[in-house]
Length: 556
Ligand code: PEP
Ligand code: MG
Image 1 (tube, rainbow, N blue to C red):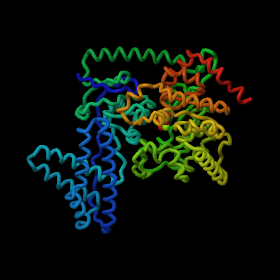
Image 2: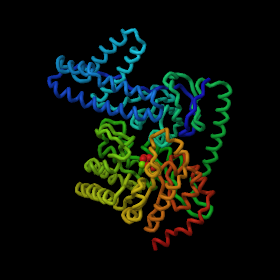
Image 3: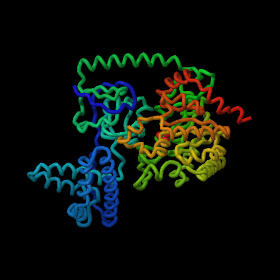
Image 4: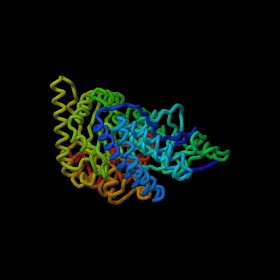
């Protein structure tokens, strides 16, 4: 038996075979082309992309695993930049008239053959690197999304790291658990695992994770342990843990159908976060009082084409219908940063978390944004919809987004399509700018929802994707963050609007009392956290808050 330990992301036990996910074998067809200049340009662009990607990989690896392991990406860059490599691709395009991907594939084949025939083990190993580099180039030439993960049976999915787009491409019903070598607990793949009730461990660190494919294993997502080929003793331990957890779950069922009332009589809303229709089942199973965050961008992730207005409309409509009049807060598309949507063709950025993402991207592409807005508006007649704008940093963004909502309404009116006239428009408070301007913003919108994942990242200057910083994230009650949240609550309440939390911190039961005392009105968590939070709220006193704030007094 071998035990590997990492950071638990979502509790649960899973037993099964390990499946190791690796990047695709590219399919390349021989095509003869006439326009060699155009083909060379295609190659040059792909080369630029690949080099930028390798720079990024090097920086990340340097931080996470050190110089030794990171240096592999420098070797990969050297291979691409090598003049003999370039000449080989160049000649095949200009002389043989091969298409760019075939020219690279041929170069790869010839050079690897030459490498393999050499005696040195070092050079033989470089043949594998050459293949890796050529695959990367071909992927960029073919403008391909990452590999679709095809799962034939239920497995424990292992990977070095998983991107949200990759996670979204697989059949999640076949994923018993997720184990990654890297990753961070606030990354969107981790959030997705939690939302989907998938036991998950990140940062398992094992270099040889890929060697363990097909072995029988048990994932203990509560404690972050992966048991490979477990012995009798481990099996007994796991069985006891499972029994214990099942009892806890059974006990939590008592809280279904009950209100979330504090010891001193204040009702708090407990909602669920979802990323799509699948998770809606979990939200309903756990009796969520509403949807506090529907991450709508997950409809776009991992696809080659954007969902059109009708597809979006049917998705939103289903959520609204199934929530049966309960509030559903749908966040407009929050793409960019780690949620890279290939079909958008976004340029590589030095600092994607500070770059073209979220509302900025939507405002840069108003037609795309209005397609989503029309879909939302049309769906609004089927339930209690609220629209939430992410990553707001200025009043201008709020005004521009609202103008686009009005334009979308005009377009629907012109076509005689119905929509509700009472849709609340709120914003996420997830940037320091939004906190500082919260007094003014509160006069412009109907509600706030604090996105603690990004707010913590920006206030504490902590990259949420960076596993090396996990120990900073371990400390949950960063005073600057709590003060920012308190200020947001005060400014919202002064202006008579409610405040929720939709970031992961909302599920931290050790902070529930603090949150409620600062005035949080609603907390939205992953579906599995709804009942534990409901139980917790019933044990909390928030008298202090009553002295600080009385919403009835403000509104009257
Ligand atoms: C947040 O930033 O807290 C949030 C809820 O949004 P996301 O995690 O999708 O960025
Ligand atoms: Mg966010």
